[in-house]
Amino acid sequence: MKSVNAIILALILAAAGGSGYAWYLLHVKTSSDWNSAAVRARYVSAQLREVDPAHASLLLSYELTNTTNRDYRLSDSPGLVAMSRLKSDHSLSALEDIHLSFPTFLPARQRARVTLEVRHSFLWPEDNDPAMAAKFKAFVNQRLSDTDQFVLFDENSRYQIEFPSGWNELQLSSAASN
Image 1 (cartoon, rainbow, N blue to C red):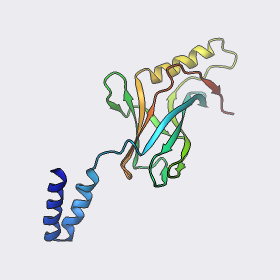
Image 2: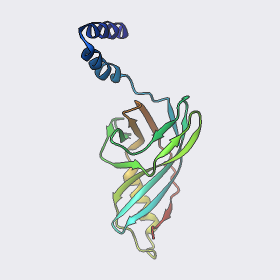
Image 3: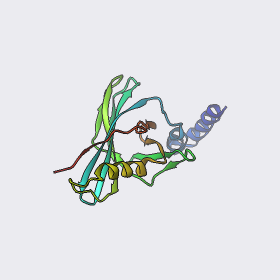
């Protein structure tokens, strides 16, 4: 019924002039649902990296599968919104600094690796600190304790990409930047 009403509205607006049809395309046509099946993500690994002595990045690697017959480009841009889905109430949160580490080209019906980067303040421990491993684990647990998954919304394609957790039994490999 909704699509019939939209078609009738489009016909009325088209009869009223070209600007009515443009309004329809901008407001009715773009309000379609998010496609969460077009690109699927599978957790691969995690790494903690020193950005500088006061900041760290948690790098979460995923394998993406393009289930469509169209090539897809994924890159940080104004139309890409990254959020966390919280365990506590399944709401979305934009309180994290989440972004893609690098742009990705994902050909139709193929797979590619991507890395999400989550940056935070973190006083990087000295190399000889006996509590270094415990500090790394505490940092990661604090960052991900209420995160169920990460979600990317591509406003241009209307794709919703869900990056599932896989860090429940996280084995961190740390690499300090030089």
